[in-house]
Image (cartoon, rainbow, N blue to C red; front, top):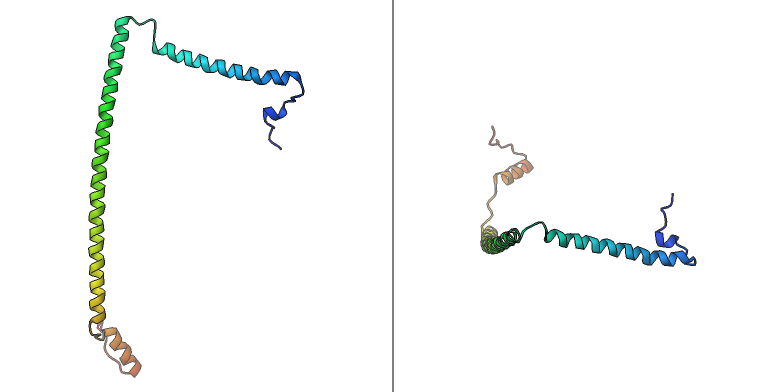
Length: 139
């Protein structure tokens, strides 16, 4: 099943009604847009409220706005503090990683320069190759 063609593709622009349809749709959309905008404006200024009620409402809105600004400043300061703490921890972590790398390099250097002493496993392999039975540590 094929999907339906878009509305504009279905129109026959040779017919005179199709040229009236497009501006009509634009007018309908514009009128809906303006009616929504007017409703929002009317909701903001309620005529049933008295002047003192509107003043009180505006005062509370201003105090809420001030509270929100203070909260935003506090959040910004807290974000800076957290960022600084994370930076300090990252620096400390990098120092610890560098120290660990240095210690690993020192251990590798000392293990490469140390005389090789045969381990128990190497001794067991040599004795097995020579055919001599040696007791193991488990027995």
